[in-house]
Image 1 (cartoon, each protein chain N blue to C red):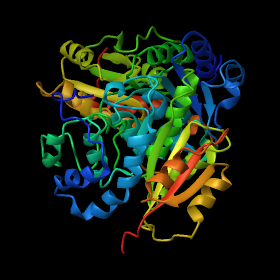
Image 2 (cartoon, rainbow over the protein chains, first blue to last red):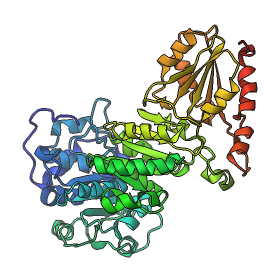
Image 3 (tube, rainbow over the protein chains, first blue to last red):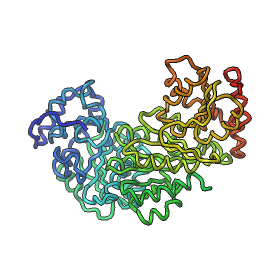
Image 4 (cartoon, rainbow over the protein chains, first blue to last red):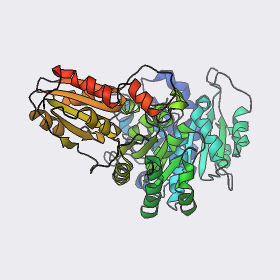
Length: 237
Length: 304
């Protein structure tokens, strides 16, 4: 893990500061809709829910956030920069040869990023293993969060993880599915039903409503993993 | 004598008692051998059902929390089916673990090609930094499994098979052993190929090296062996895809003119059942076939 370069700016504490931060990143416009779809879901997580900061990024009992939907990571980088995980000055170099910030994030290069992602369908299985590993070490407090996209949910590896985690009762595991209707064969309500059928706790919310996201994120779910389906405007709209 | 798989379950169960960092991840296959260990360590003996992508991903996730995962199923389902998980969920994430396969190239010949994985080591060869152990005897499997479990955060692949030599050798988890010295050339026997190679080279004036850790490839041992022979002629005899280690041997010998013959399992799908002996013969890996192929290389390795 790379050290933070210098002290960096003070953390940003307002949502409206994220837009200008995202504006510093250019060169991956094809993934623009994917980037903005996750912005509110990420902000509410990092601002109000996750117990992790630049100072605790290596602490064994930190909460883990695994960005599985690694394409269009500009919102993720903006939030990490806003929270001080790395300097805002890194953002304009997005995608450059010497930049730690690629068009898909590399967990070995980006301070605060738990995993490298971009190939769809890896984050949730890794999160299942992370939850199991924490439990085996007696670390029952940390929450494990993973963010996936609705089309990413097509990947069979996710179905293996969903079908296992429910019956296994992994109640420290949390999934945010950002649903911008980008799957080719959607079934209305199908995402929530899929998790529910596997024994998960499920909430479906407006993915732009910060209070609704917070309420869904923090809903009690004893004995069960928890999925939040965050619906945002369709990708093609 | 137990099989390598039985030894794997027994040894790993004991290691789970000794090392709290260790965890075993299974996908139904092999779970009976871990029943007692699972009773003692329910959080560290994990069975994810028939889900091989999840199997490997869970191994990577465990490693992300600082644990040392031992991930086991048949080679076809451990290396081939979830290959991208092996590539990304360990190497790309910067974590290690121990993959332990069973089934080898044709341990269950009557089971057919769905359960054969002669290409597993060649596939692992496309990735960086994996140690590959190919034991030739259950006692060697135990030694190499202990090495693998204790190897920090290294990435280690252990290939178990029911193919076995009669007697174990004192393997150390890194070096090739010199079992015979000759002047006409060098034969490298990998794991369970050793007995057939020794039988095939009886009376030939060749050096025989025994390799059970094939990655990293012990190029120094090969160079030393070749330095003691009249011609830099090398035959590799591997229990998986023919020529898998040819590039590694070539790299070890790149500064001297040399020739390498890679013997092993052919690419062509046999579509035959039967038993192990029939498959060894079909791929030219029985003692008589090996003697002809080795003896015919470099004008006959004949000699003494």
